[in-house]
Length: 121
Image 1: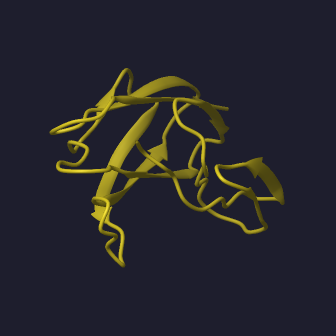
Image 2: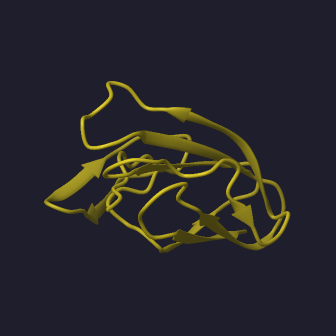
């Protein structure tokens, strides 16, 4: 099982997230919340932060697989405070040119792969 945390977009956005509704307003990086294996649209130069959590042993391998150079992997960090369920990781990417890239996160132990599509305009 994996979850994502935080939503930050240039304008207000509401996303239905498990278990409730999340709404925030901010500028800066895109941080999807409660959405796995989804497509997102960003602009050239925008940063994308994807946060994944595992349940049980293992984590998601870094760097994840990228289908194209439309986005660039910047970094990964552990999110604190730690939770007993398993590690929470925040992966950061930069949108570098128009196009589309598929990002695949591979678990190091158990759990499914997570796949997200980033469309850059």
